[in-house]
Figure 1 (cartoon, rainbow, N blue to C red):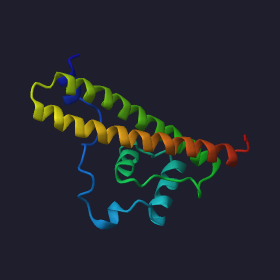
Figure 2: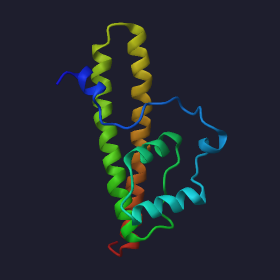
Figure 3: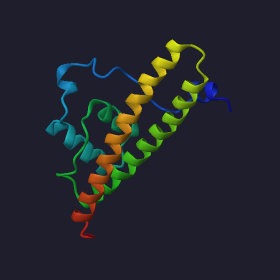
Length: 142
């Protein structure tokens, strides 16, 4: 399937947004206690969503796992990895789009988005590694 068609039909449930055009409260780099409780509750009820993981990653509000149980962290890691996989696929598509771009302006705009995705992927990957360590400690496998 051609790249343009894949991007139009992409199952990704979000758009790439500017660094932070949201309210000041939404742009802090820490989750609120209510956010943390909501994530844990979604983990307990199997209602975690990759779009919410990616939204938090874009804002730098990653879940730290401190208040979660072994089972909850395991579920969170699973969804975080799915979100990272989506972003890796998006990065491949955007990189291909950048190569196919016919104007310098379009190439520059796509490069900005590619750089944002790379940065977010790095942060998400690091957070998954941290959660895996927490998981091994809480599950007694370390």
